Image (cartoon, rainbow, N blue to C red):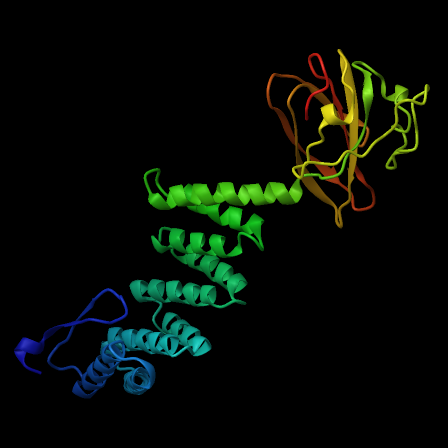
Length: 349
């Protein structure tokens, strides 16, 4: 090499940032020639289409693989970059498995080259994301990436890409990815705004899935009616919906829900002053676990779970909400019972 060639800047194609490598006069000229030829073929390939592009990429892989085979100790950067270019070439050829394996080979062979390893991890996540059956692997790989590079700038964009992909099939996981982005990004970061917006959309999907859609209701009854005054209510884990009031005029009914877990009491009953209504539902679980719950009404309510009072009185104007959690056994039903007692008349919801 000449003195003018001692410092050479190597640029890669397909949007990759330039990588500067410094050469010395005593380095292996043959390995350098192989690398430069492979790099030139790789770059030229992205100016072509079809078979011509494919042929150039295959040739680039051949030359760059020869650099890897030599594995000259003082040319580790060249060998590492050759592996990245080989992986990129496989990716452009649609050879996903070969591409991922090559990225992993680079990571395993050159763990000390952080920038190349980080770049390879990002590429692996993106490759998994591009595959219809690769979303679980994309999540696992991104978790590994986050562990190795906790402050990596690429994490937020990758996490959001995953969340967008899985928001319909796995809204719980999508919400968690959004939450991680929100916690990592500074307030002014556009990715944080995007994550917050997506989180709200995913939260609505979760509510649509988890709202209880089926209630049995009984009323109207006196505001302070005791449970013993309501027929069929004291039957543990099984409501006797055939029970009626003493005068036979009031019975348990199953109102048509509005699709959001709300029962319209005004439509179900003829409301009267100082009246209330009872509502009951059941939840079964396949395994022992702790379930979260939220109750909401437009006036006041009391709540029992498995005949145990959890909210003695929740009262307010407008929308009133109570939130908590409860351990649930897989061997029994999770019984929720509410008493609604509006200010004057039965609440519309």
